[in-house]
Length: 239
Image (cartoon, rainbow, N blue to C red; front, side, top):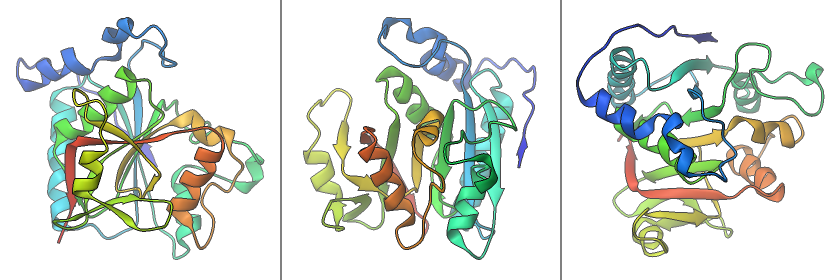
């Protein structure tokens, strides 16, 4: 795992506008927010060793974006591969059975406020990442996913009966048309942001065999967390 250093570059471009939108210090109007008003540290977790062309292009654009706009976030990156997918995902979060039943991801490595999980075949734009981060703070959320399209009809959000929400079904469940955010039962981890401290509140290992991603979300929900989807942020899986 590694973190990247930011660069002292000032550029009067789209990034300046995004900074005005996304800088957590501007969120003073949300007095009930559980986040503190300081630059946000985000760890991007990307499992595996194979990346699609679409993801590679999206990730490259994002790296240039944060290099050119260093004041938006403090980024860290984590990538790991293992044949055992549970081991891979737990290790990706710096988990270790020897650290005890309750542990904070990356505690011994660096401070991380948010964990942003990306599937290695998801296609996205840099501003979509910033929108998710901004809305986590704006609405004081602990889990927020984009609308990840599996195909033209189905999303990666999952209902209690283990079937996928259709895209139209998700959009129709939005109660607040201004924010376009709806609560969902579960989701795969295609393009999802978590508050880091959530993981400290459930027992390790976070990911367990037979029901990895969904099992994690179920444990978090059982502990009181709510899962939301922003239907205005649409990403897709590489075909």
